Amino acid sequence: MRVEHLELEGVLLFVPTPSHDDRGFFTRTFDAAIAAEHGLDHTAFVQDSQSRSRLGTIRGMHGRSGRGEAKLVRSAHGAVLDILVDARPASPTFGSHVTVRLDDVSFAHLYVPPGILHGYQALTEHADVCYRIDREHDPAEDLAVRYDDPDLALPWPLPVTAISERDRSAGSWKELRSILSA
Image 1: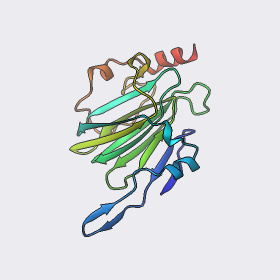
Image 2: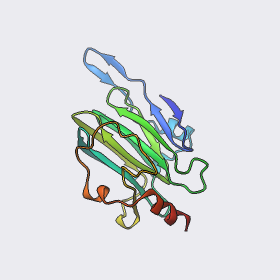
Image 3: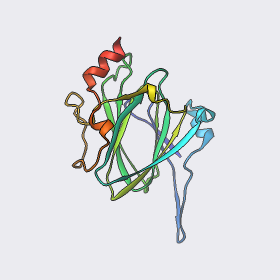
Image 4: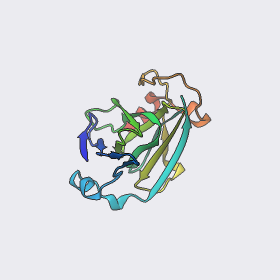
């Protein structure tokens, strides 16, 4: 398994090496020793979740206040364009974003550290995304920014076919910046 350090500090892409044969494939989706080599404590993860989205659906942009939330994200079926926005005011890449395609061909998964907004768009008819999260969900700590905020100008590749009311009515990047800077 290869590990790539992406442009946003602390964001890692884990790229396994699947083994294919006439039966199909086998791949590791997580390796505690490799995670530890890159500073991740695998015992900190307390919850696994999965979502299914239709082609064009956007979920995001989400984060957590307080101590934030770290997660490992991968596509178990189909493909998504995953977008991360650095929402850590002290970070040199504050306000910058990075995009990563996650799919069921490369089996790559993404480590998203606390303080990063996360969202994705389904690129295939159906996409199943799995999350491994380091803390229980507390709705009181939810942060969200509109997926189409003009100040972020995020590069969603497809027309939006579905989005939750919560994501449609999320606040602006400018509003979140003022909250984070307070």
